[in-house]
Length: 464
Image 1: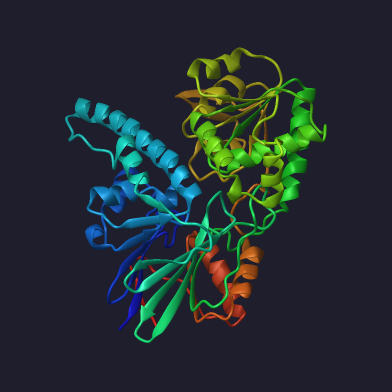
Image 2: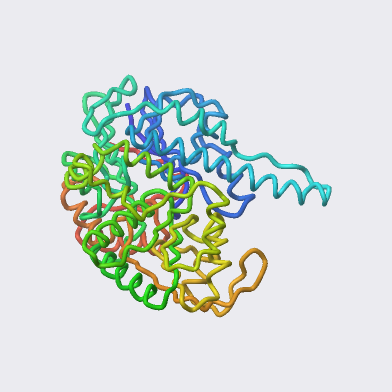
């Protein structure tokens, strides 16, 4: 008898989380994340499996971010027929995120094929369509936190609150190995303590092994309270010069966090009651899911919502779906706050707002999330003199402010605290991090005398 784990994705990088747990009787997948990279590389990685999808007995999704659930439709297209488990909030969010992912792929392939036709090159197909994504999300079986569930002949799963985004889960997998049971913890991604709306991550005792993220394994976050203070200062400074605050934001969790803090600042009369627009159909839909899953929020937020004080419903907050209404904001010269996707300024409605407002020194671009290398968002953060938007060079005259305190990932100290609460452990496997971050976390855990290991991609390890 033996239990093995094969590390297939989210190894040496922060996208494409996918790991296979194998026993003599079962094959269980942890996450089905989409890998991001150059187009050809991404397509190859996301369509090449080191296992037969049709032979998988169970799939567990930790949460609804695309780098953890985004390849689910591809797996189903390639034969996956097993039950898929996640929290109810994750199921509802996955539907929206996967449909949007399918839509983006459709649009991208149409653009590529337009060029390929002109060059006489073979036409391409998307990984999956929005319709295929919708069908995939319907196959998710909802599981409550703390519910111990038999998922195969020899395995049980229990989900605990990861405190990362709404419905995110730490996965505890118990697999029978002869006369003993191996308990494996999967904490990828892990949230921070004190985040608005969410309970703190749950620490789990009695584990044998732990798979742990290392996204910020070598970094330290500012306190989340600092985000609220800086947000107030930026808004008031911009309003004084009669400008607009443009906030490029990820649609899941980050947009809702910003809205939450804006509501608090308004209630405290810390900022003037100017118009606040959430200009994103997807962020609007996701916020509706938040309203439907009050039970996944912390006690303070759920009690406030139940007494009619909903942080996503206040007088000067407006959600925009219609494209015409979105364009009208560019002709509105009043001071205002515009929250729009996408987070890295590579697509979405934020591009139109930047195009029309970035050259005006009265305005502010407020960055509340990570901006990857070679993106428009990174160039704005670096405050280059000219940025290209829709093929046209624009002078960056707007003030640029970065608030790093907004982060849903545990930093080094928080990861160390989590590990300490889980001890004793036979071994810790570090995944989901750029190499330098993973190495930094490895160093501090190793210095504490813990058995820590950085697996290579496609490496298979025996759990004894």
